[in-house]
Image 1 (cartoon, rainbow, N blue to C red):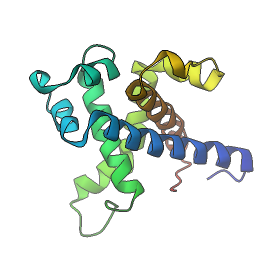
Image 2 (cartoon, rainbow, N blue to C red; image 1 turned 45 degrees about the vertical axis):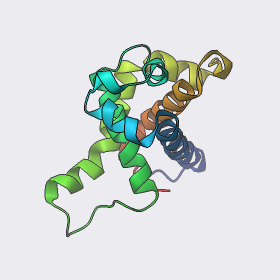
Image 3 (cartoon, rainbow, N blue to C red; image 1 turned 30 degrees about the vertical axis):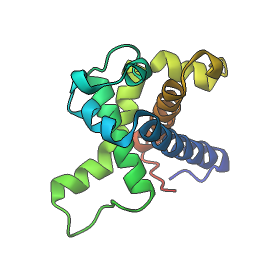
Image 4 (cartoon, rainbow, N blue to C red; image 1 turned 180 degrees about the vertical axis):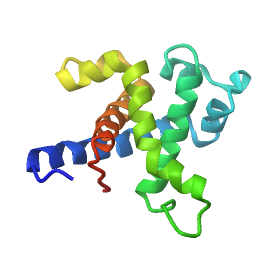
Length: 154
């Protein structure tokens, strides 16, 4: 891990953005409806949820919702890497920040660029969209840190 306090602060900020954004996203979409997003049950999605995901819930959005749950559950300590877990589950917990960062960079790079650059307008989007975008931006930051071997936990 980097010894630079600035880099450490950026990584911590990314972790906080990811945690707050994911919790806010789950609350805004609704705990039950997050399952509908993950399972692609389009018939049970509210118009608010569809708006949150830009008018259509696609593959990347479903991965992001799974990542949102993983972020919240690991953030509160309900999930962690353990010797009693199956190896594949530990690998998922280890690498999901990198996967989310990559998906965020590919699918949401324009929004991430606006947030990092300071031109993002929170008033132009719904609460759900803002939560999604905060979560994705935090995920890109922590994913980049993870790719560089700078793993941190809150």
